[in-house]
Image (cartoon, rainbow, N blue to C red):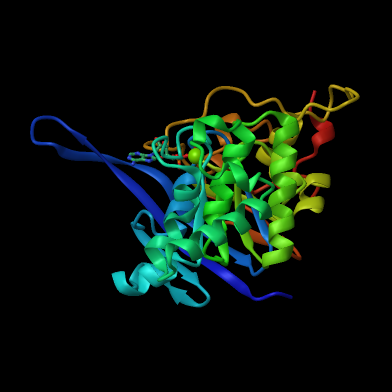
Length: 334
Ligand SMILES: Nc1ncnc2c1ncn2[C@@H]1O[C@H](COP(=O)(O)OP(=O)(O)OP(=O)(O)O)[C@@H](O)[C@H]1O
Ligand SMILES: [Mg+2]
């Protein structure tokens, strides 16, 4: 098995809530609340969950674009949150991020060649003609017409702009890329083109991805393993195919129920999420999902379930995992 490239250990990220004239801290938004995951070298780890559950915050803390409130993030065995800024700068070349919005994340006043070439200018001693040569290579690698390098981003379509962002992200030959909703703003057909491009680059460059999206359908094709987040907690982790075939956490089952199927199946076995996501400033007691869970029992409102390995490679944070002995039964749903 490949070695772990990223080790996230008990990471918390709280945002203080200030109030009143004295600007006193009256509480915390617990955006990420004690998350531990590992990402293996060369794999794609898909991260899903509803809006506001902490996916982007976790991605940013892993890259140390934000500090952690507590916990550690190890890259190749070294804790990046205790590195000096000099060490961190070196590390930055190995870790990159691709953002959601292909319209907002590229500077409209820069030529495409300058956008893609900027990391090379900042982090290497390459001459401008060497940079231009590398930009041409990079544009060809991501399927862009390199003769258009002297144009501005607005002259490109959404999918092409996402390719510009990808070319920029891979310019320094990174090891690890966080793709935060990288395809969410694109049409479905363009989405799969960009996903195929990312998979091609992964094979060719040996990249490791954290691929963030709202829904389980987007991450299925690209992910080796998937982690499901709910209100700042990781609630289930598993190999993609087994997790889709056999969700253990009722929340995972609910996200799967939300994926439209080509042929509508029986109404039974579907979990329809009721109500809104509670506030991460004031999460429910016990299991955070219990107020929305069709299987919740008394214990669920009292005792917080820990993320536990219940099957080889399968972790779930639920007192009554679906299909397990003494667990919940999807067939019991009306
Ligand atoms: N800088 C910040 N200051 C205060 N609160 C923040 C900050 N950034 C994020 N939050 C809060 O932390 C929680 C998690 O936000 P985050 O952006 O990580 O969620 P997300 O899962 O990426 O959501 P989305 O799917 O909408 O992108 C939210 O309640 C959000 O309002
Ligand atoms: Mg986000």
